[in-house]
Image 1: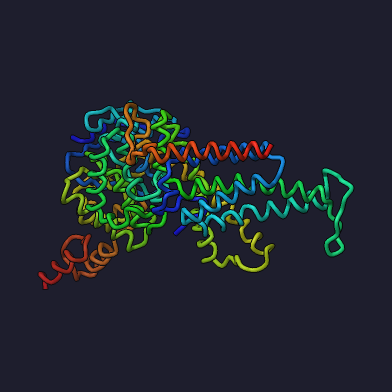
Image 2 (image 1 turned 180 degrees about the horizontal axis):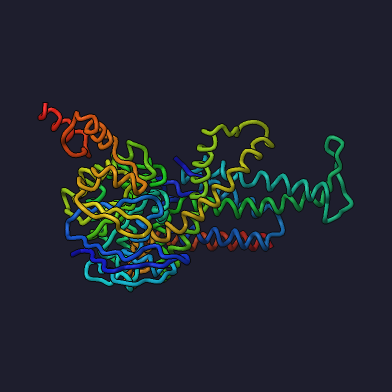
Amino acid sequence: MAVFASFVEKETVIHRTHPAVKIVWLFFAFVLFFVSKTPFVPLVFFLFVVVFAFAGKVAGIFLKSLLIFILPIGISLLIMHAYFAPLGGEETVEFFGVKFYVQGIEFSFLMLSKICALVSSFFLFIFTTNPAKLSSAFARFGMPYKLGFFLNAGLQIIPLMYIKANKVLEAQMARGLKVKGSLVDRFRAYIPLLGPVIIGSVVETFERAIALEVRGLSIEGKKTHYYVVELGMADKALFILSVLLNAGLVVMAL
Amino acid sequence: MMIEIKDYSLWAGGKKVLDGINLSVREGEFLAITGPTGSGKTELCYSIIGIYPNMLPCRQKGKIKVCGMDATKAKPAELAMHVAYVFQNPISQLTGYGMSVEEEVAFGLENRGVEREEMKERVERVLKTLGLWEVRKNSPFELSGGQQQKVALASVLVLEPKVLILDEPTGHLDSYGTRMVLETVDKLREEHNITTIFVSHKFKEMVKRAERVVVMLDGRIIREGKTRDVLSDAEFLRKNGMIPLPITELSEKLREEKRWKGRNAVDVEGFVARWRERR
């Protein structure tokens, strides 16, 4: 079962690739977000990531998660900039009798392309990188064990909240909560879930802190790792190739 | 003695939650602790594993020695070298650190710096012992409640503790999950002779397992004795807000009607055998 925003175990070259290579893509997605003046380059970047998602056999959950995340942002961006036009502009086009500002449409597409690049690289990273191996890789680069653990735990927050929300949803449905119907009905049905999910998570945090302590998180001294993640020759080559390719994209985007 | 508590009192949240506790647990013993909600069972466990005073503000008086260590001063991580703790909610014990059962179980060994080869061996051994080997690659969050509790057990047992504290380990489980966890506890007891403290409201779970029962009320130990003696005293249990086992109430009723001469029963098999014997 694939969980939203969580690692998906597969045996593929993308999964085997060292996390550092994937971090390069994540880093350049951030760079493109801030420097790109054209939607073309982030879209090319995005297409690369989609290809990687297919190669990593996570395309289904990847595209689904992307759609859930991007669609509402895309629609609101388009309405905000193309219709209300906070940036102003003279040129307009009409669709079904409604006037839209061309400059607003262009800006929406630019922003959307950047968001697509950023979010897709993040999802690819999450879906294809085993958190335990990520911690091990961090440790190899000299990151303190606890810091690696907390970064790792941070990445787990969304999937854990998702699992908890599903459990609460099932419990509420068993007590007669209707979660089907129009978009408004669905939205209304999800509001009562927020309390139990958030409060429940806070309560669990204390017990989880105890669980971490009794399993020795605070023990001082040498730490080891269940996995050994080495930066092999192929990874080094991919790392350099990724840096060069992405640097080229950044130059094109300026 | 594995655990020795002398005149121990604890103040937390502005009130006295434990009052003059005296308790000894010997090596290999299976001790049950029971009592109504709010009687101080969990606070006693937290004191033994060092959560008080390290993670929760409190004032303490008296002594707690766990495997020779002073639990009122030692850090939970130090005490964790000897004492394992499993609590009610299986979900909150999963650290979420690992995406698979084996990674979750290995977490404690990583913290102790156990070498990778030994770590692999120990993880494999404990997963096989608890019947989790087949699901080692699964996410612990996808498992049933009973299996999740077994993962929680595996995660602490892999550390090879001398003392195992089970704080209402079946409280969140259905009957299938409960059976699964209790069978595992029985197996561990048979194979490893671990000193076990079993905190529970469910008398049925203690009857065949615990040699001794400690009853707590309002932060004090109000009775300590052989399991059979304590749990068969229906009047005492009722007087202190607990409900005796159905079989205890049945044998009590039969005695009132002069159809049963023996003392109150605590297990069905024993009662039936004695009933047949007398007829």
